[in-house]
Length: 382
Image (tube, rainbow, N blue to C red; front, side, top):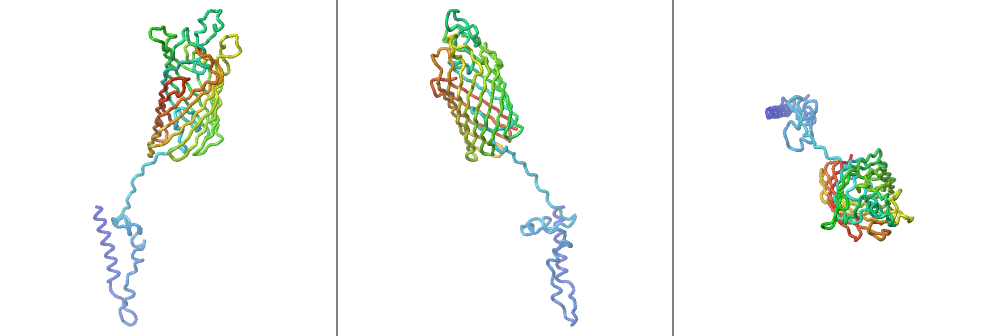
């Protein structure tokens, strides 16, 4: 059918041109045949009035005649194939790092799981959990006796292995302001020397809930400077090692800088300040068991694979803590202790919303919160 229409179009054009060029000559006033009037008017031949719409571009590029002429119902223009919609990425990709807090203000939900081992000072400055419950078991005449010690007991573990699951949500009504909250779940396994009694049973449950806000006075597709204020509430059962038994306030400065289309830098600096504390050792002293902990971190990410719908980044981070005061069971002093960890891992992102991070961390200093940690995180950004 399509070939028949093309043939009819060729015949119609040929007939018109032949008629115009070789038709009956017209006599002029002198009786001579006119050669001027018999020449065909090419502009007239290809006028829209005679041959319908005329596609100059199609005429220049050889193709089916129906692409050049449309003779009313004889020629039909081709329909363009549907175009696949490209993935619409956000104007600034959310944080690529896995341990440093995210400076980018945006709406997201996140699920994170940590598995760590060998925390040999879990009650240091009451940062991880509350003052050891072993002080409750001391003789009343001992200067360290503390019947109100809130932490797990009655024994002192050699070290603790733990896992934590975090459910995080952030809502940003603007690109400069957001509110967030985090619900943690914790599981503990105290470890003892072979043959020794367990310091306390394995425990698990809800940890200390965190809430906070972010404000970014500087926000652009390549740079974010964000002030974050976070607070934790003592919702975890301190007797089971699931919380610190006190609230904290945590001011922090966060920074994001895009270096190239593939590389970015991120950093944080802040303080975890306890709003209350357990009694120190001895209990008659003026110093409490809890202490401030300065936190800092710096990391970089590089996008090795950058496809339209999928990209892969390598992430390297250094995270540190400086303990300002406080105490720890089995340690003479914690003031001024520095702890530094290195973190490395890939981040996979696909579509405009999904991101998956898997990272490994290891302690670089003799003083630690844990010896090793493995983190897995899924994030959905809106």
